[in-house]
Image (cartoon, rainbow, N blue to C red):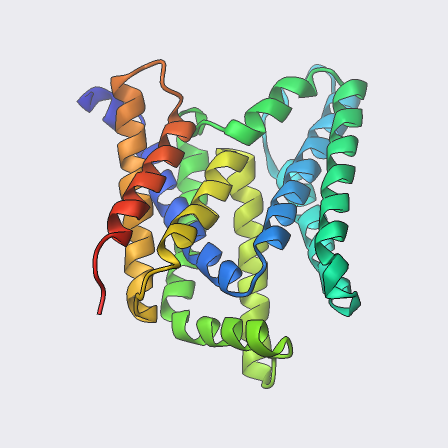
Length: 278
């Protein structure tokens, strides 16, 4: 067990740092009532990555097609385009927004199926991108995404109250940017969110990304927890879930790592939600 922990130490570290950052981001997105939008942003990023890999396979059939810079850039572009499309939806009748979102998701599935049909070698990546496996991340990839996520984590931690204030105004009044400082801060948060989701999906998979984004805050949302303290609780829940899931998968070799992490995040969040907070 100790030897496995040493071998995969950077994978575990990346899972803890990225997962904790996603949890903080997810709390803000949930408070803005943007969970469905965020799910579709994740789908858009995954689709962009898939299209980039398809292009690489067509142009360079002998290439090993490891995930790299081009898939990450195209994933970020598709997610960014989807974000601006969502801004246009603000003008639409709110009763039909979920129908529009569901329609977009169906279109994404159709495009993905077409890509896989055109380039059958994409099928394995298409399946793996949803489940993911942090044990397959190289040390360099793990170090890169850890450093990137840590910067975002520190930014959100320090600006937690300001970002929370913007989230409250947006959810309450739907017109929330009043000062240049708020606009600047919100742009930073939006960029960080899209970039982190894209990179996390590319390296760690859709299941890991969505689990860390929404499971902790959904389970903890019904509790009377101070705004400042929720940061620590979310971070601890994900840290406990990731490490427990990894240890469980090491102890039972047939147990897939990321699904185990998801289940343990549920348990950790639930246990923390049972505490009383004043």
